Each structure stands twice: as C-alpha cells, then as structure tokens.
Length: 170
Image (cartoon, rainbow, N blue to C red):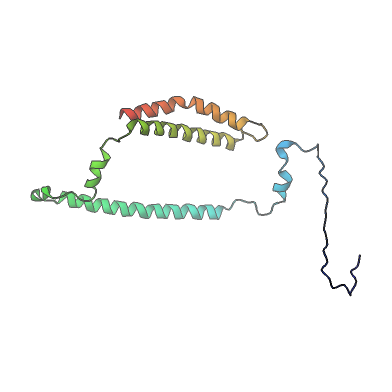
C-alpha cells in the first residue's frame, strides 16, 4: 500500500503481530534452558578477574592488620614503660576496652537465642548450598530444595540449642 504524495494530514498507522506458541514434547524439563545457554557467547569464567579481586582483598586485609598490629605494639610498649607514679593516671588506648569486654550483656538470654538461631540458619544455608553445588538438589525435582531446608532446620535444632545454652552459661 502506497501513501499518495499529496497527503499532508496526520496519518496513523496501526501495527499488529501475532504469536503462536508450540510445545515441543521432545525436550525434557531439566534441559529446557540448554539451547539458550549454548547460544550465549563469552560464558567462560573470568579467572583473571577473580584472582585480581582475591589479591586486592588480601592486600587490603594485610594493610589493615599491619595498622592494627602497629597500634597494639605501640600501646603495649607504652603500658610496659609506665612508672609506678603514673598508675593513678586515667586509662588510655586499649585499656579502655578492657572494661567493656568483660561486662555481661544486659539481655544475655536474648543474645544467646539469637546466636543459636544464627548458627542454625548459617549451617543450614551452607549445607543446602553444598548439596546444590554437588547436584543433589536439582531444579527438576520440585520441592527438593524446600524439603532439604526444612529437614536441615529441624535437624540443626540440637546444635542451635547447644550453642545457645553454652553462650548463656558463659
């Protein structure tokens, strides 16, 4: 269809399309994404970037550790050279932390409960991820992930209780 050359008014053109979905019975549910993953270019693991990030994290952690060690060493040397007459002076540096470290918390029961639950969730998550990485928890098995997490949650109640009781006791 051609538009006449002398046409000067506003022209509205409506575009339409149609889609027809066809179900392929010969593709298994577990391998439904294979053709997309195989067609994607550059899906190799970027080992150089991973190692670069790892080295940067190690370097920065080493720098922070050196700064903390220098500060601690300087404070320890200063504590060792204090005279007996200076013992009455106000405490400074890391000695100020001493009073806070050995003070019992106000809500010890709540702290121990949260610590026990955190241990339970952490161990459950790590075991579930480990089993998923090994391939035991396939997406093809519907509900396997939730079943695994619920069973691990129940089984890890005993270690969580132990950690909570040990923390409350101390």
